[in-house]
Length: 104
Image 1 (cartoon, helix red, strand yellow):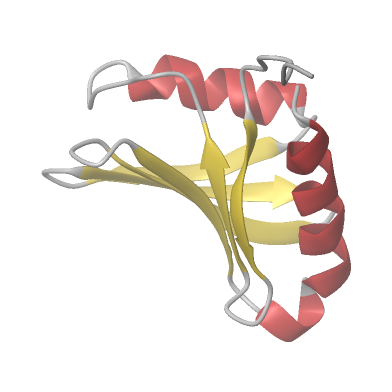
Image 2: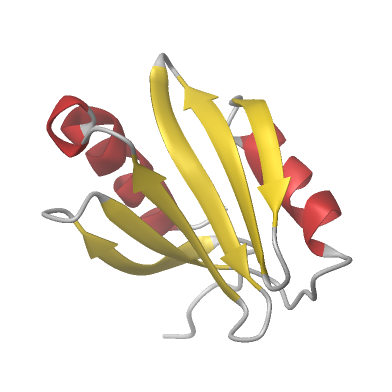
């Protein structure tokens, strides 16, 4: 049975570390903002603050009252959500991991 291709999916859920590594379309440093905005919009989340360095975007995102970092490192094309407070974010992270597991 062929796996349905989706734009965003789960690559790895690291529950103890409060991290969800997601599969995304290809991007580079300059194209990530558009991809990131699309992802945040699809999750009905809100960007609070954006920061970027030489090789990484770090966005502070509010998802249903839970604050997470959305990080994207363009050299490895790795995108992940990271909890600010792991213990306070377990329910939201588990929900997001299940959503990414299904793909969208």
